[in-house]
Length: 352
Image 1 (cartoon, rainbow, N blue to C red):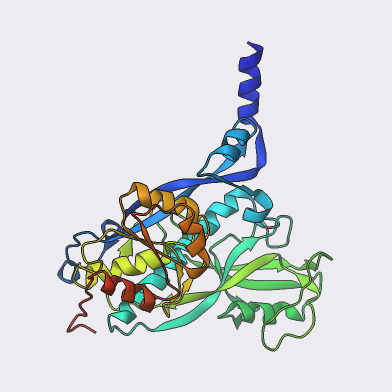
Image 2 (image 1 turned 180 degrees about the horizontal axis):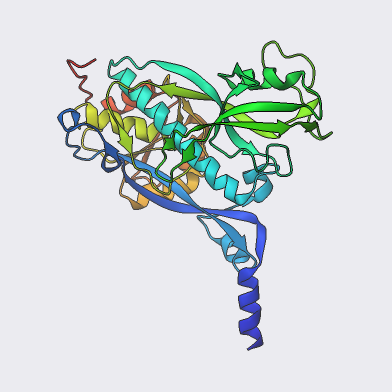
């Protein structure tokens, strides 16, 4: 009985670590929905791969540490200062929404479509606990004005607040967007919030690399922000990535869209997995958890795996001889690899 109680208690004690384990690799084309007249049947296609992330309990610490395909990550390294586990989930969905938008833009531009974009404000990425913004702002909401002056970028928000002093009240115009587990950033109503700024904590430098901003700020709002990029897409594309967060599916989503819209034979009959962030210009960025993703790719029967150059060695630590790993730093390089595998990309002849 004592042993049972000890095991139960140990299973309930959470440590300051998370464990990464292999997730699943799944076809991307079934997640992508485009107008029927623009869609093509995909034979083999591109695979998206992810990792599973869980908090480590005292009971599971040793098994997780010794498991060959697991990786323990300290919570401070994963969450960053002042980020709660709940906020981490919201950040993941925000990053997925951004990845979907960038993937659509990069894919459609590759196909010859014109995709206009503009800066839509300063989107909140994190809110510091106990800060003036805590309880007023949430991850994914977009600040569009300060005291009636329009804000279109993250630097615009920083410049607008830079000369303010502690105790000063500022009026923020905020779009109350919401984040969906499917990776959608849903527009919301505009709200006017009055927030009293605090004194900048000594642990925060207050320095900024934004043009036109000199010296540290005096006052403190307590948010980390990014520039919200808004696109006008020439045709509707929806992607259902339910329960998947983070930006690392960007490359796979881009290739999946190209496959569905560009003839359905992008991989030349191969099962090709991909991981890496994407930006609207087609640049591929670094991601984490690649060893665990490589295991998932192998289990799904993929024969080829596209990864960012920084992660090539990590992928090779788990790749068997039956899996060919390619390092790509851009969408163009990824398409070159697929062409060598026999893949084809058909550009639409009209509708651009």
